[in-house]
Length: 130
Image (cartoon, rainbow, N blue to C red; front, side):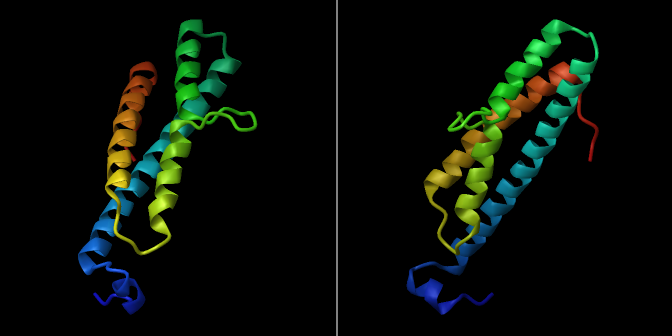
């Protein structure tokens, strides 16, 4: 692998770029997973609105949606999906050494995502394998 000399002048090494690549691939997978979860939640909410089903399940699903989606008002509180997407954009556009804060943020968001997905799976059943 050859490194751009301008990037090397900034002290970025091939190992740094490899770490960035691996980090970005993990984040990309998380973006895909959160988008799939968002689609499941939206579909389930639509189905629950058109049926006269369990009000408790609808309430639980709305609570999940509140955590997952950004509030639909100007300057609304960002949801988990927005946080994950922001992390992806933060490290994907420039060759750089990945900061420990980005790695720690990924771990925190992944943990939050896993808990939310478990909650959705508990409510809706396991998602079909892709």
